[in-house]
Length: 424
Image (cartoon, rainbow, N blue to C red):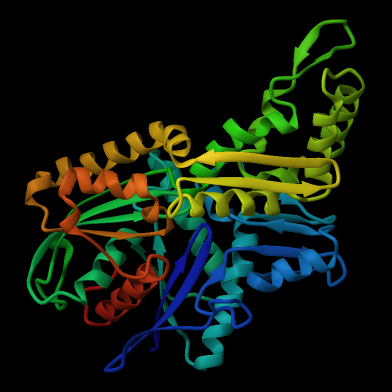
């Protein structure tokens, strides 16, 4: 039986093929992409083909069809949301697992291009989807159902930070007590683990604690949107109601702007009618026009790309400018690193508390930790890295490939499963 590891990420996904004695290799999930080993966790419903496409092709078709279809990202964030039962896309209802299965079918097709054998797949999952046990179970069962819909029936799960720990362990020459910090798009997860103790046998006793919090790169992007850009879309304005009262721009609409993948769901008649009523009675009708343009033009994906680019530039520069100009929208907003760190201070404090809770659950202190292995795109943010340096010392911070190290570890986990020491 051939074994694979799948890191189904909020933003990116990666697949590894676990082979003995050849070890673990990354597969090309998206040959058309700049990095073919990474698949953007995007799916697009094309109006012309009336079917879904994924990854780089999803973006291409979205653009070629003038952004008139439905582009969906960060679908992983809904896994533990029991209010998301189904959504209506082009006259058809889709359950959440139906949408995730689109990505998993693409993964299965890549696997089938490599082998005709039935694959065994280890899928990564956060240490904590959400801090409610019944929803934890719901999230994992939805993942399993999506895999089954994609024809993947031999599936096990592994915590993503544990997988990252296994990836780091493969580089060690001596045992270490490590803190594995996986800071991705949707969650920040921590594992305290003894590494270098041997890859055979049951490793459960080497895992001292796991802990996680629903804060990640998407959270930080949402803070930038909420505090810097919603003023372009009606925040701070008001309108006169039919009863003659001055009312603030609806907060529930502005809240949706914090997550670009939720914005397409505002393209319903009820929201359009509401915006029409607000526009004629608004203190700033141009802002309402901008809101409508963002929603009806399907521009939110591209606006958040500019937010993400600015955030990334702040890792190298002390300030960046968010520029976004399309019909009805004209944004030019400066963001400094100091301001960004202030915007995410509360989130970073929650991440720190989660990290400290993992140490406490493992009954170890920061000084007992030999190394801190950082993975995930958000681990590259200077303020986040500085937080770890303050707690443990810069010399203890280690990293490999921030994007694919979890997938590599999931491949190792699949190999260990073959030896009777597999996913937990």
